Image 1 (cartoon, rainbow, N blue to C red):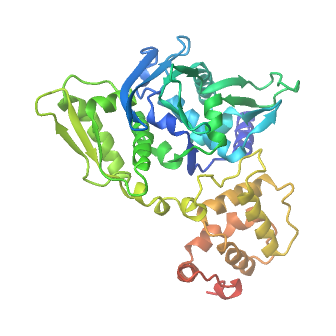
Image 2: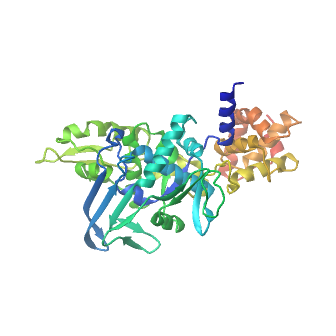
Image 3: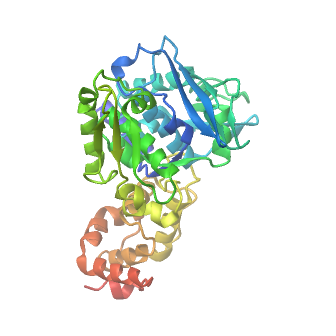
Length: 432
């Protein structure tokens, strides 16, 4: 095996592919324009000012949202939004590390790359580093346009500036406590940090988000998700002006509405095909007098109305915390519970204190393919009957998980038992 292959194998084991799931993200990031969908606009619009009239406590107030980018790094694009959402995902998994009375998120660039679903090449590593520097350099000035949940008010009546990320300590640099950082440490902006502490987060399906092929799709999805959730449990028809949508998403507004919606039609059609919007519900209505203006109507799809049908973890936990193991975190009790239960049912001592990396990967695979923990006991008996000498979780999963899931007799019986909230003992279910 060559040296290059050895390195790749090592990084893949250390930072396994991550199942993203439902993650909580600050709603202010979804409702206000920060990122540009077109990456060709990297060196354009370094300062973007968004103004509108908004209803605050029964009064119409003028809000201002100003985003200033550093000329050296350029305007933030959807790729930077991808990295920011990945940080929220890793934060949900790992939690903060308290260093000198401040709460830091310790991550590596390779962990971020895994959340993005990319390979660990040098180019992707450099892209993630550049995105982190760009996020660090962004300055936002908000006038009645950022809701601070901890104080219960809109921040910045006279205009208040803040950053998405206040500070980054790169690997190898000294930490505030004098130790050397063995990975990157990120300090979120103070306003974002306050909202994270009090749980002011909106649900975002990152598996669905990262599966969208187009940057405009990934810009539109969080915005529409916020708008639909803002309506409550029964969201109705969503309507927006074409010019308003362009300002909200930092899209280029065309002179004529008919030419401007050519690409947007494809974007909305893709969201309909993925059940985020109701099929055939999107309408583009031209303004009767203004050729450059129009209205867009759409209805929420099954993915919004019934998220439990598309994400088993949403149904089972009713939280937005992902259930997957992170390589250097022991905070994820779900993965360790799977390992502990497996060895308990197997009748051997559980190595939970220092589980083997292969067992951790196998437990991650079980959590993804076997959403009901009650099925684990059935799986153990099924495996022991066919392989009496089984001794490891990773071996059982590699050899018999796909066979077990493909056994229609057992799966039908388990499904029938679930309808009555009954889970049989395994000797009965392991017999064909």
